[in-house]
Amino acid sequence: MKKAFTIVKTILAVATVAAFVTYTPPVVMAQGLTPPAPTTSQVKNGNLEDNPIMKWIEFFINVLSVTILAGGSVMIAWAGIQYMSARDNAQAVQAAKQKIWNVIFGLIAYFFLYAFIQWLVPGGVF
Image 1 (cartoon, helix red, strand yellow):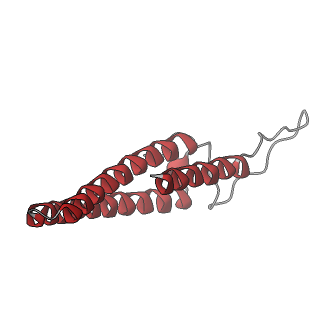
Image 2: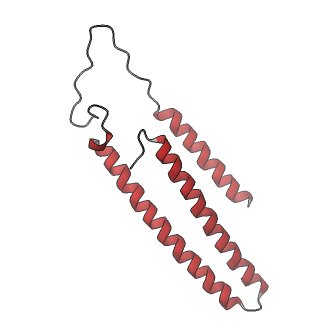
Image 3: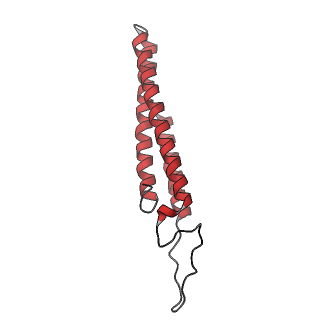
């Protein structure tokens, strides 16, 4: 359990550092000056949907979500099979239960990470 808390603390620390590193203060222009026109790779009029980086982030998060959910489902099924086949072996039953709890904890941690990413990106990823 200590290992799981250490992992969660590490994820939160990395996310906090990333939030401070990626923050850029708003541009303040002198009176009468206009900001330069954005190029094709920059965000136009605050619309993040046209930004290619946001499209890649959205694609990566979608692939990661499907992979984690599919992997979690497979691991819970595998642990269930191990639990059923353990019979009277107490160590095997305990190992299967621990595996199921680890998968559930990992899925909950991913959902919190997903919510944090939605909060971190202006306007959300989706």
